[in-house]
Image (cartoon, rainbow, N blue to C red):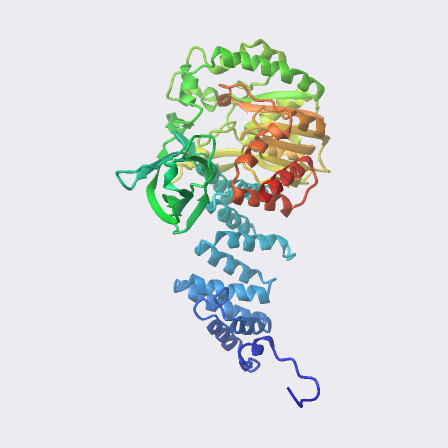
Length: 604
């Protein structure tokens, strides 16, 4: 000001907004301070709609609170939640966490409020803060809530990874194993997706995936739009059940005049329309019809049915491989044979559950099945593949309520592999097993769930767990995981190309070998990866249901399932994958390949 002298004193931050006079909280009790801070939040005042001076006042108030004061504030937020005001509770907790970032009680309050409001991306970040706050071990329940937040966004790979890590630390924690089974069951459920026209006379057509598709694949469903060229369609519109609307730009392809092909996320889709001459035109409602996939057997045994691999027909022998496919298998065996010789390779075929316990299966086995055809091939005999049917007819190798073998069943199969690799080690002295109740991927399809006994790994003699070095954020085809374990009794590297049956084998493998690299690519090796990894042991694994068509052999990552996954991913999925591989930086051939692909696609 003119004529003023001296240095002007710096006022508190909140006093610099709108000429407001600072409030004095120094004489307030803890309860009064909490109440004042709560009133500052008002009705959703903290956040994007909050006047800056009120946010600043609240933050300075919270920063000066003692632990007792924060308890009072926590109670105020809980009162809001009890009244159904989740937004108010979220705002209080969010401001409190900025002032007291190490307070775990505040963090869990904010995370739960975000979950209740379906602000799941923010909830994930909040739960993940437990792993980075440097405040000691992560509470076991946080793993469950973080996995649930991922599950509700249909990010099944991330959810499974969280739960697998939880079970590595707490092998007998039943809520984690049960949630893992529910997620796997949810992801594998089959649905028919139908578009129902809202008007009788429509010139545009929406083409959705035909037949039944896995629920886990609806996030990247291939759809087509057919509309006359003069309709001037620019975007596909999607309205979801949560009320959110999205616009996806269309671009012509070689499918013909007026035909657009794209990959979209159909999770929660309720209505689909088109943006025509900048005006929304809602044309279709989306219906989802679930296919029941469980066959009830004797004595409470459950089996897979109505699946995309047609398990019942395979067992009855009414579905066999064609001559062309059998010739393709012979070519496959001729190619992988030398590869297996160079890298100490073993091929392992997991038997179908109905073959292992036929006495409980309601269908009659055919005189000749697909597996009989494969075993009769000269190439199959040349690679001497393992098909441990008789070995797995022991109790506890397969559970009543799941399609896959138990960890104990995988343990028995691993023993055979070790014999082939010439590894003389007493696995019974290293791993112990216990019985746990689980719903499995079949029992979890019922309401209430059907529980059954599952024999799982319980302990490791050397007591040192493997380090999870890398995960590329993909859950099925194209997934890559790497582990290392400096305490492992077998110091070499195991490279696996397998399917979901490998999941049960991983707890033993990563505690047995010095390094493990797992690719979700059923018995389909990537030759450049084998040469880069130079494994001491190579495992090519598939299961009986997958043998109708010959397994693939990929020359490089460029033509592998990973490359295909990246090619069909939309912008949101590419961003998610890029964040995943950057969250725990690793310099390997997979991260470099993905980063190059993802960054180049995002630039476009």
